Image (cartoon, rainbow over all chains, first blue to last red; front, side, top):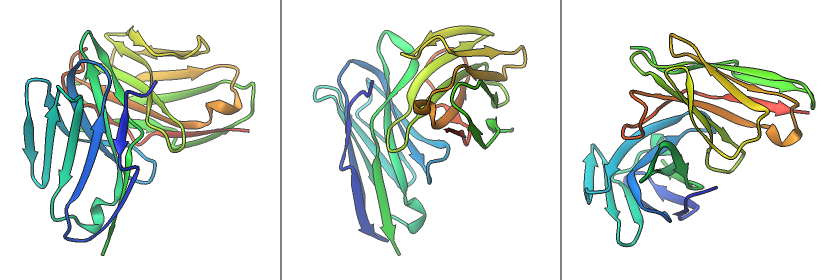
Length: 112
Length: 114
């Protein structure tokens, strides 16, 4: 079963613009992770944010977590054509840390 | 440090057949998880192996089975293939048996059942 939803389902922007993707989830979590997937191949881990953290940065990535709203956002600043991919959020739920529960993903297109 | 490798890359099987997919975990990782990703969907958890034992299972029938070997590599076996088994199968490894770390994924095996 899917944990929640990413919003928007698809996003198209110009190179240099910022891209924001949102993720909602349903249950109490241990942590939330963001992954990128190129052309239906393997997933690449981008960033992990724990339930007691509110914001985290990694290079051009900024992730926020609001546990009261059960939501997270991923911001990619100064986007590049190479950022074109699908982005997924996945949660590790409190009490069951053996699996990731995934959303449906956001398809990001960055036009040169 | 090597990443996660999966084989084969692509596979076409006939309904009713059996298939074995293989995964070599990243060096130093003792936990392997398998996921099924249908087209346009997020991955679905199949099961996880830790120290050669199944350590958690998703909502998949018993015809999906697995193994983990002493070197932490793993196999996913699917018997009596059905058309709906067509998907990308992803293997992920992580250190320890818990989900408190990011997972390293392989490039996946694209299975087509005809």
